[in-house]
Length: 312
Image (tube, rainbow, N blue to C red; front, side, top):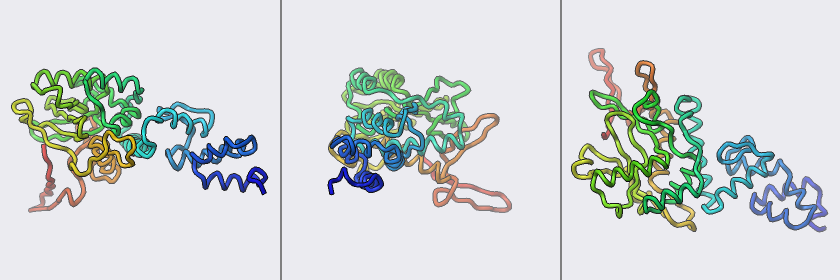
């Protein structure tokens, strides 16, 4: 019996077992198989399994006529990147946005829509860098946060911060337009050579400024210390052995420090290791751990004492 002569249920089962790519190829064989491979239920499953989609929409949240069209738009939008990396970044942002929507909706409104490939190329040309692949995909999904200056939104940084004594830090992700201006200021004022290929990707919106730098050559993320302005001191945010294939499109394991950093941040938020701090009318993400083993709680003479190990 020829394949096209089989019943619809059999063809549907075959299509689901083949996976999205082979199902699309199957639909190119003839009209009968094209109809079967276009069945919406197939693409509902593919979109759910690969992209965690429950409604048909593109990567920017725009609605599409069907799940098959949605899947096609996702593939077309990211055809220059390894598909497993796209899925991983989508999962990372999904985790962060899901937690924020439930627990910190006022910060969710600051997240900007993703940028185009043309905008990424513009940044690379203006700064003379080649962005790591994971960072490119991160910005394709979300162009940082719309937070300007020390206004009423300054506590809405997605990365969050801490407060004690005279230290008040709240870090937000920069949109690419600010990455350009902040990086140029950084190179000019701190005397760093542009050949070092550092770009500024996140800053504190409070008076106690904290700067985060991405090394576009090796994919490491650094945070400036109190000695940054005097001697350029920075410390890495991620263990170097974890970073791999930041510019290799053929690898299956592209991960720079930016992606690893955001994934770990999302994990800590969703697991309750860190949470929200309320001060007056403002809420913000508190980076002080709230659960063991990163946090210790003891009661001495009726006084509850909480201790954490934290680098500032």
